[in-house]
Structure formats: structure tokens, C-alpha cells
Length: 171
Image 1 (cartoon, one colour):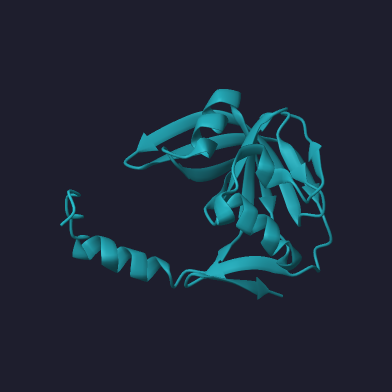
Image 2 (cartoon, rainbow, N blue to C red):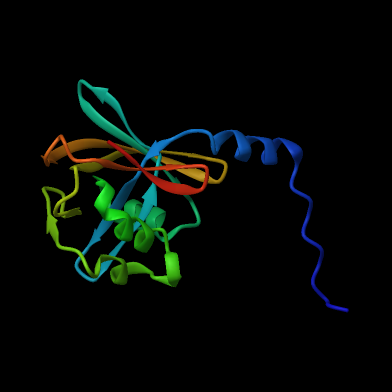
């Protein structure tokens, strides 16, 4: 017999919503934040443009994550849209294998952009943003970031996508 309390049952609406969201195919991005040794990042499928006038991006980040803390502290983030060849980067930044913080950046080449956030060399695009607003709701924070710099790569390269719990390629 163990002394651990039983896990509460997952409500049917949560199970249903998780199942429904698995049908959405999302482009995979790595969000970077921090400066110097104080850097971290995370893998997301929730990076989107919010406005073109002014140019603003929006990302959704779990409030318990190191990424949330770093973005809040440094008031910047960079959205790195990954190519199909960068699955290893996505896995490192998702915490695959217990990799954290600065370790996630190893094995790739990075460049600081206007805000000091790091851009992945070879990403399809890197969008450097200064945080202008944070909306905290439930388990996540929505960060709105005014675009300060954009780097684009070859538009013909295939994109890394995520659907139904697996990575894939969008031509």
C-alpha cells in the first residue's frame, strides 16, 4: 500500500478537448528568451501574428514553465520557425531527455537579434519581439510582442509541423 493520494479523474471535457486539438496541424517554432547564461526556451505550435499595423506576434506559454519566467524577466522573445531538418532542435527545446536552460542551445548556431533574444541560424524565419503586454488566464500567459527584427530564409524549404502527437513535414 502506498501513501500517495489517488490522482483525480480527468474531466471528460478536458479529455475531449485534448483529443480535438490533436487534429490540428501546427507549425513548430522554438521560442527563445534571455541573455548570456540566463537563457532558456520552449517548443510551441502556438505562435501567431496578431497584427500587421503595428507588427505584433502572440505566443501562449505555460505559467509554470522556465520560458514564462524568462520572457517575463527579459521582456523579449524570438519566434524561430523550424524547417523540416530541425526536428532535433524542437526535441531539445521541448525538454526531451531532461535538457534544460542553456543546454537546449547546444548543437546549433545562434545569433542575437535587436532585443538580445537568440535567433536560430538556418531557421525558416526568426521574429524578434519586445513584450508589450501579458494576459494571464488559467494555466497560461499570452505574450504580445511588438516585432523589432525579422530574418527570413529560403521560402522553398519544407516546414516542421506537429499533429496527433507526432512531428511531420509540410512541403
